[in-house]
Image (tube, rainbow, N blue to C red; front, side, top):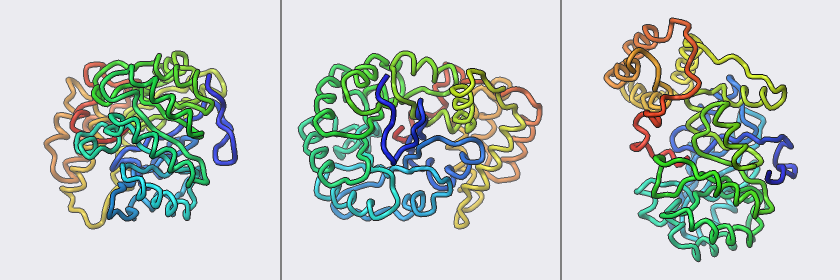
Length: 349
């Protein structure tokens, strides 16, 4: 197992539980929703896009300046301009952040084509230079989120040598390559190699959607903790359930459909933008439902009907019809779903 998290910036809890950074999801509103259902130990923001003319995104910044959780928040950056990355890190450190994280894992084609996120893994020398520059300028914790390579898992050995040179404080590893996106099995052996070779704590990321998959991931990787993204959208209770199991060795009952209905309504209310039309907000909610709905309703009728709804009344009518039965929510989405619509979403988890 990798070293336990250390230092004043992190709670000394093992295994450590972190919310993965996901674009247009892990914002201030979603943080509030999670706090109502059971919270992670550590939050990561959506990524701040960094380029020659970038400025701090005020919407993402609210996750830091208005943090309602009392828990540490790490600000994530994405980009390849070294000078601007350093300047942005300096600017972010004027706020109450526990750390600065560099995104080396986003597989979205629009990001990779700009040589950012996962696209940087095609250029290990550039990664080395960026880490060196950031390490010298970051006074809070310096963390990195990465995939295990761009094309091949064999690339990870070289990446680990680079990470080891720069005294990073925490490494989060999504156990797939950029090219694999979300479609392959997780390469647990590669995450374990990071655990065994690096002096810093390692968080395992990818397909942690339930107690079963969480325990499997910890067993196979020896990681100091878990970074959970899509699983937290589907089951916001996942952090509370995992912490209960780690503390007591017993599993809590799964929520039922009525509890899920309350969660969806809370999510709907908390994420509402006063400037958005009802149609626009219902459309945004479908982004969440792509992860919540698989396996719900006879023959997936819940998600099928939701994809066609256009207004609030119809949205909640479908919720009432499918989620008032009190049936236990499935612990995991159907294996064949791999979360509906995932390939079209650039969440950067």
